[in-house]
Image 1 (cartoon, rainbow, N blue to C red):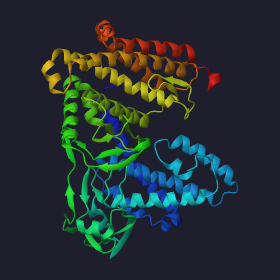
Image 2 (cartoon, rainbow, N blue to C red; image 1 turned 135 degrees about the horizontal axis):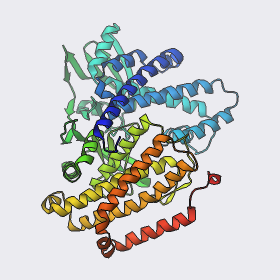
Image 3 (spheres, one colour; image 1 turned 120 degrees about the vertical axis):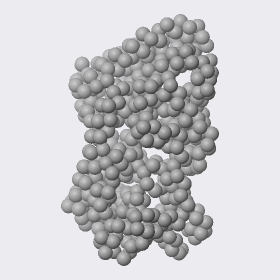
Image 4 (cartoon, helix red, strand yellow; image 1 turned 45 degrees about the vertical axis):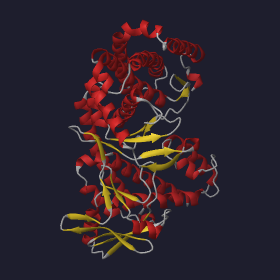
Length: 518
C-alpha cells in the first residue's frame, strides 16, 4: 500500500482493534488460570475485566485510553510472572541482571526500570519487594480505571454477582502519562472529567493518598473521612453527583473529534510537575493548525484525522513533542516554546509516529530488538539503534512532504497563509525545513539500505517501507528544487550549508556501518 492510503490504514486499524480485544480476553484467561492466587491477594477483579471486554463497542479498542489500559494490564501480567519467578529463584543476582537488561530494552517508554532499579544498576537486594509493590500499584490502577469507562458496567456487574457492596482501592492523585489532574476522575474514553466537590476536597485534603470506591446496587461513592456519592443509576441513566467537564473539542471530522486535554507542565530537569487547565487560546491555535494542514495537504490531513484524536499541550523548556506506542492517537505537543509553523509540523510529526506504530503492529520490519547504537542520527547528532533511525526517517519524511506542500500552498494562497498565523519568513523557513529534512532523510535511507542489504537486519516489509520512503522523498525533492537557490541566498542559507557539511563529515566518520561494530 502507499504511505497515505487511508483505506488501507483504516483496515489496519480494524485489525488492530480486534487484536486488542483478543489480547484483553487472553490476559483475563491467563490471570484466572496461571495467577489465581496472586490476583486474589491483589484484589484483581478478573471476572469484571472479562465483563468490560464484552461491554466495549468494537471501536473503543483503538482508543488511546482503552489501549493504554489493556497495555497496563499486560504489564501487570508480565510482572506477576516475574514476581512468581522471584519467589522460587535460586540465583537472585542472575535474575536481577537478566531483568535489568530486559527492562532496558522493553520498557524504554515507561518508568518501570527506575522503579525496580532506582540506583540505575542490577541490584538484587530488595528486588522482590519492589516487584511486589509494582504489582500492587498496577493492580490498583487498572482496577480503578476500569470502573469509570462506564460506571453502569460496574453497577450491573455487582448486581449480577449479587454483591451488596464492592470496594476498590484507588486515589485521586494526578497522573502524568494519562494527564489527569488531582482531585478529578476521568470518565468515558473521550476526555470527560469529574471534579471532586468542595466537600470531598475538604474531607480528604489536597494530597489524597488512598481512597476507597464503593460500588453498590444503585451507584458509586467515594469513602475517605466520610461517604460521598459520585453517581447513581436510574434505569439506564447515570446521574452525576460530581460536576462533569466535557472534553474540549478543537475540530470535528468524519472519523470523530479532535479533543484537547489539560496542559502538562514540566519543572526542572525536564520532569513532569503538574497537570493544569488549558487556555482557550491554545485550543484555538491547535484548531487553526489543524485547518492549515487540511488546506495545504488534504491527503496528509486525512491520515492525521484518522490517527490523531487527542492533543496534550506541553509547557516544557527543551521538550518538543512526544507520544507513546501504547497510547495511539494521543499526542503531547509543546505549544509554548514553539511558533505556529512548529505547531503544524509537530502535529504531523507525532501523527507519523502513530502511523508507523500501526504499521509495526502488523508488520515485522527488522530482526530482533537490534538495540545496538551504531547508526548516526542526523536529527539527534548521536548514534541510535535501527528502531530509532527507522522511526526518525519515517516521521521526518512526512515532515518534508508537509513542508513542500505548505510551500506551494503559501505561495498560491497568501491570505489563507496569513489566516493560519504564518508569515512571509515562515514561507522561506518551510522551504528551508523541507530541504534540510530531505538531506537528513537521504542520509538515513542509505544507512537503512545498508542495514537491509549487508547486515540483513531488515525484513522484506522493512525493505519495502524504506523503498517507499526513498520514492516519496525523491518526488518531494523534485518539487522543492526550484526554491533551493533562493533558500541558499536567504538568512537560512548558512544553516543549510552547515547541515550539509555536517552530514558529509558524519559519513566520513561513521561511513557504511560495518558488522564488526554491531
